[in-house]
Image (cartoon, rainbow, N blue to C red; front, top):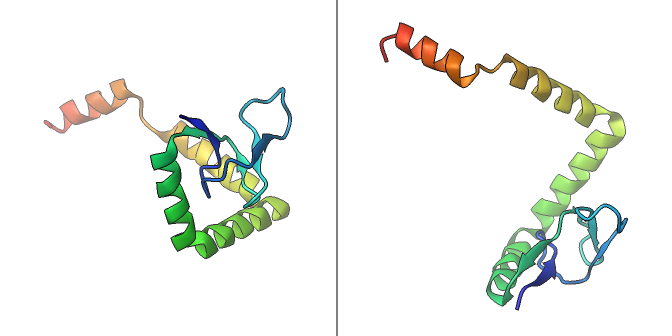
Length: 103
């Protein structure tokens, strides 16, 4: 049987933060916020095993991200990614470049 679980720790102790926003869930066990996943018992066991092995690393990454968001750095990184995406070639432009290079 599949159920909604936290993709970080595998807990089923997750609730919608705002019911109108279906993709925003909060895990009461590890403080994860984001989309929940539907998982069966096998997947839950794998997630829980990974969480136990890497718990400290995941918590530290979450703390770093929170600090970046608080300092505004996360917004700058998002803007830089948007600019980089604008600089990417379209499929047609890439095909043209490859033809020019004889590839």
